[in-house]
Length: 330
Image 1 (cartoon, rainbow, N blue to C red):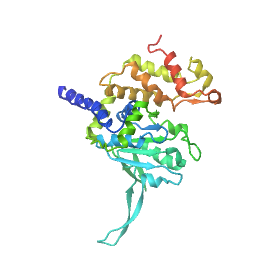
Image 2: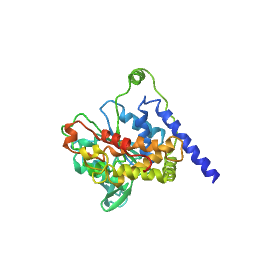
Image 3: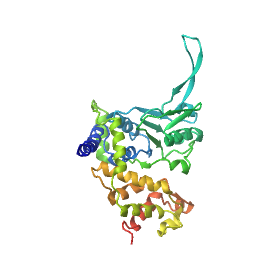
Image 4: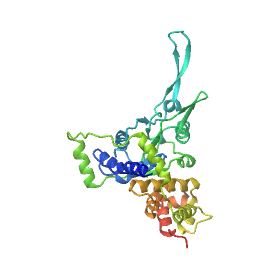
């Protein structure tokens, strides 16, 4: 037992080193990086929204390198087909017998870490193929199942500015993403550092910090993190407060069309546990929940036209939930 505890502590101690190594390449964006790592530890997938030129691809690629995980990038376009993602059968010939047969050729989704760039630029049929693989962690083709690598993380990106010629993800498919992460502009000092590093001769050497097998062990440890019954009740009340029929929050009554489902509560629990590990703790605290309630809920609450007319977004509603739903039930 003592050996197991020491082993897990060694794994947890690698997480700060992991972030330090990534910081050689990525300047700032610590919160975004934390949320991507939390997604991985919780065994889910995330949607990353940010304008072009903020190093989304570089961040994901660097993360895969320090983790010894295979990485693939898929650029989504209007003419992309499901077979371009999951793979297709190719006619092969056995040179010894001359017989011909179909061989499945794996697509780019067969990697530990997949960057689905501009997912909203491809038609629903192709989006559905990706989302099915995300959920099932297996690709079915020609009646056969092909398991995807483990660990498996999809990071899908969206450009929030240009919406012409896009296919927005339906709410039911958005719900499949564990977190909806917003990537903002860097601070002035961070931007200065980025410009200095990327326009000179600086070429960092990236060390591999953690293996795919160790990530799997950390994912198992995440589920064992302690969550007090009072905090479980708090999460339940937060989720239920997003729904019109249960909520006592005035802003929910005024602006929300429909609230979050039970999957939101599951996501919030797992992510809070993952953040506890990331912070070197073995128990969840209220801060973990209040920090993660934004990326967990912002794509799981639907606002009606009145909110849009008054420029109210889901983050505003979530802030009111955090303010008005007490940690301890009265």
